[in-house]
Image (cartoon, rainbow, N blue to C red; front, side, top):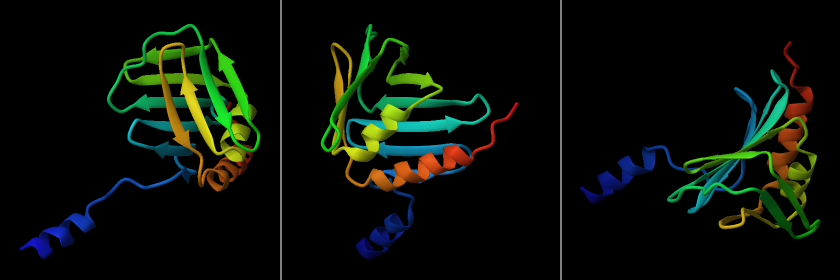
Length: 144
């Protein structure tokens, strides 16, 4: 019976490990760890990029500034006051995300932080999905 149960469990969908890229319905890169999930989406219909960081077991407190501190090959900290928090979700949208994509592609880790909270993501394996995301975004037709 135990072997049968293990077999059935192995057939169920499971969380993908590492950074992932998908071109449909919109160009998207994602990663999830025990603390949070990060998604970067390019929507050619607007056209704009969207970042969402969803905490797993907490809520984002309102904060005046949101930052991303990248560590590794091209260390960089970027900040904005044009973000929104809604429960476990922190969201940013903009027409340009070059610094975010460079940070994800060329570094080893990133901390997403406000003045009161922080969540870290390893960037191991992020470079190739980021390159595929960039290519997808460049080829996506802008809708009018």
